[in-house]
Image (cartoon, rainbow over all chains, first blue to last red; front, top):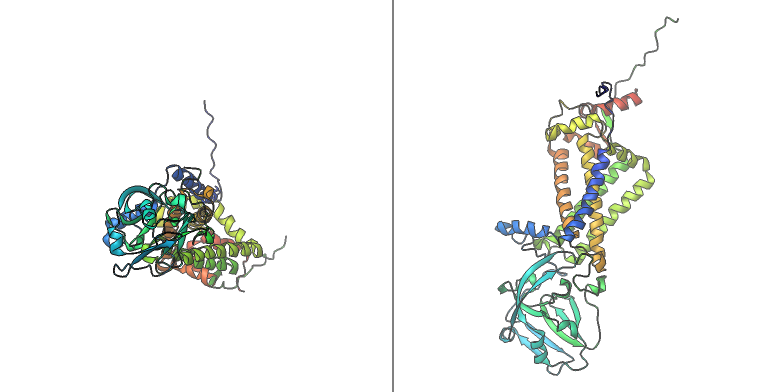
Length: 240
Length: 227
């Protein structure tokens, strides 16, 4: 027979449970577990979820990030593309420096390529359809000298630029893209032309591309001089 | 046996105001408010395409970071200079007694109607949980922010879930702050508490109705309220 439960009619109203502490520590634990779990899932794309709301409500377009993209620039206002005045200069350690007008660019052979885009801050956009000029076409056109070891990409958005080695520039899927997902590149994505290098984080993919220079020496890019890892290879974190 | 009756302690009429928060507590709250909205604004500039051109990215990042540092430094300084004021909050928020739990079981209607609620202490159960979760979220935001900062410098700190948790924590803390602002500025039965964070005092009768046990405690400690 069970002993009768003792009665506690005099229980003090002040009997305390550490619920405040539990809420505090639980919030921190949820955050830590969240980082671990969501990282194992390869990211959840909260920005993308909010962005899909943005897609559904036209008036929210441009206010919230859409299709998972976040728009980064370093100078205001962002460059505006003018087809009449735009030129792409390719020079430096090359046999045949060129200055292409927008119509020259459009007459250059282009290919399409599908790749994932990864930002160093943690978000990604999968299956981006790019169309643009391949490095091989550029090399055929300007014929780099043996002294050309690095390629500088200068943006119309001064002073943004970044640099790849010749080996990195000729990696598979690298493009000088003029179209994204079947449409001409939008202003926020670097119209009319941006560098795409899917193997590296997005800060290497210079937007509003205006000037490509083949160089003998290495130079650190915009973000690299501001503390970013010069090693921008995607997927060197523990969960990938 | 003496026939004289014990001396009756005649309390002078109590002042109509009662001190609720110390200067250090109000200063910390003010710094938190300013830096929170600073971080929210710069964070929105980093997040929204429409605001990307209002404040450029390097500048927004820099200020987002400075606001976080300012909050951290202010907290540590106030903790060092006025440890008792901070410990008082920690102690109050830490545990919930039986009355607090009864209060919580009343659900959100307690925020608007306190008449049938059990008497509450210095902070009511909702305020305790709001404080605990808000500070917890601030720590989550600080740690994920630090990971984002480190991840830009070294790939081994870069996790794909970090930015998602930073986003989720931001959404939650903004929702809590909206509720907090509504109750402090708009809601008829609770907005009398605002002055507690402005000049440090609240109306004694309002406090008696909303934080009855606290008023009883301080009146028991200092029966003469004439000062």
